[in-house]
Image 1 (cartoon, rainbow, N blue to C red):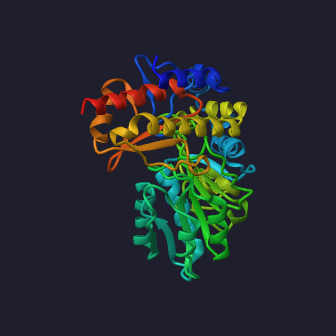
Image 2: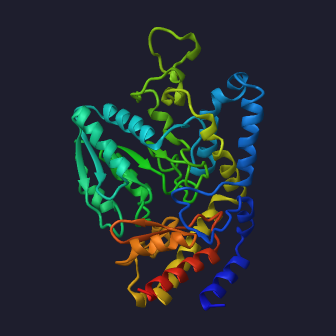
Length: 406
């Protein structure tokens, strides 16, 4: 056994979350799955839940299930995510749309609330494409002005960078808590406070932090947030996003996609729209019950294990990757792109090499699954509940083998 694998075996043997891996469905032939930050693995309990939903809730109860449970599901499930993962009191989180649609709804509402005296939206060039594209579309339809931050791609947005862009015309600040390429963790409390001091609202994208990194939205007085559920929340392909709107803003923010289920009295089917109370007003059309079914079991598991222990495992996996790259791959030209400090790094590590695209393709052929990120990054997703140190060691040794044959 190599030194790297021996270290990994020891870490797996002493991992307090090791038993969690047995709760996931086995993937036949898989050597290493390091792309859980794009699509998390399914739990055994989730497979059972979906089968029960199809056979009983849908197959037997049929339309009655809407009255019995589904009508309130977006709000009830939102509260569960808020309680366990967001540090959010009940009545502030809802589930139901794609990340793109939810982001549009909240950003559009925030821009309208900021008004013509504060037309500027501060955002960064390294953010995920959806965030940038949605903001561009809203600017085109409203006349909002986009103020672009240009952070170091290997790091991310800092408070100093944000402070330099804030003016009396800033209406909204739109940023990601964890950078999707580098894994840089933004200083959410400090940046939120800076925006508030300037009189602006803050909308945080939590897609790469929810489920692995506490955000404590209420404690830090965050205004708005969105996040997906198919990564670390295990919702499955196409699972919907959540939206968070602080209670203090809910009456004055008006989301733009007014649908029947967000109406105060949806079954009256009246001639005009009247928004429902609280987060009901941020629901639009009929949500996909099947798409929401996969989320709750992972949220339950996170609560049972404890979010702090999930975060600790993510940090430990990241340290293992960085130390191993320094010891075994640096001499082959591999560099660590992600932050080395645990507090500044999310639950993935990106490494760089000129042959990364080719190496990633070859790894997939060996049932080792990371993902490639432009221009030359291999992103190693480290889902704490389902990823073993041995998987990581297998992947790093395979990368070394590919480069040695270069």
